[in-house]
Length: 552
Image: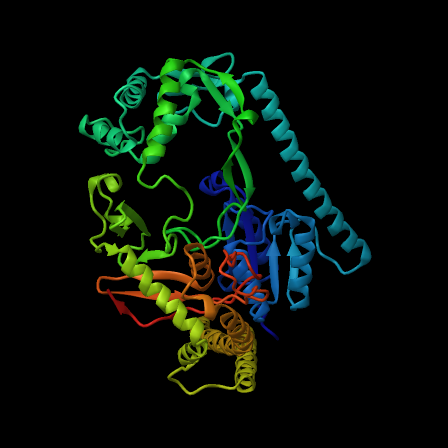
């Protein structure tokens, strides 16, 4: 008999569902079906996405499942229903066809996936209905919320800001409403007085709140800059709460993964401020006189104009790519004047973060020296693209004797046959359970090790082919821009760094530049103008070529 490797996939959409453990019932039904099919649950591979939308394919567990299927590591996958695999009908068809092409049998609990035209039609109809239901739900929800906001219903607002308490329809009788929490309301009034009359900055407000011993709603000693900013910009305090302040747009590319965050975001979209003309005003109890609110807005605008660095966007050459090698927090730029500019680790900002306790003691770096060192490394890479290939091949060299794919296939086939014979022997009663479990565990571990070796060899072969293609494009791009590198302006240097540098790690004694090389397939000739390289190409092959440490 042949052993079949079985897997399961489960998903819930919202973080609230993930926290409430609603995925447990989904997993229980799938495991019951697997056990009913006579499969040992201990051998089942489980892929679970908690809090990820089904409208996107970029999900951590789904990515791993597809990688394992592509490597031939499974024969069957159980899913509760098609919309757990994907909400979009086109995505459902894509995933089912991909898995089926790789020899993986897809089992849906609510409907067997047959091979007849009628079964395929039913699956397609289910996918279309699921996609239609989702679109209908979203549109009805949006229209319903908009109508409730136009009627002035407070219940449509997501939560009550600091200074208020939200009273639901069930808890207070009648319509939902905001109630004033006077202890918090006095703090809000004091903050508005400090900014509107005393003309304090937000950092000064945070310091005064800490010195007065006033805690946040969550009990923190220190107030974050963003918390006070949101408080000062919220029109609810003058009695005009707003609905529709945020517009949701698809996620764009990120320079690096945020600290302690997953590589794939849970939601395929992010919030963006909507124009004030589109806001819908809902009346609530006022804490601040409208004249004081308007004075605060004028003061915030004046503070912005008088700031040492008023412009937004790309203000520093290495903004967004500097990372502390000790604590993992990002480095940010600080400028007192033109002669005193430096990069500082965010983990050392104990005055405004971390409750007054410093997390990191990594030192500050002069901005001009750091920018010069990183730019020189980028120029060296463009001048000598072969360094990338040398570093990549050096990392591929393994200390053990390399294996050929054909030899590994033969060993894996021998192990599978041995496992099958072992299972037959146990079924016939020739060996006891304890001996069977120990022997089959060792053989499966050996088989898993060989599968990893085979997959690594395939990846190395594919990487070599892609590396050659990337090097050809990199050499072409380098030939176009090399002549103008020395005279490149700030924006051009920043775009080139964003395209080629994955991150810059700051250690106590040195910095390390880690490159990522995208295809750069259609790079225009360098003409001294700004280049938009960050969005070029499709999914790139990231090669963590690490430069030699440069002491500052």
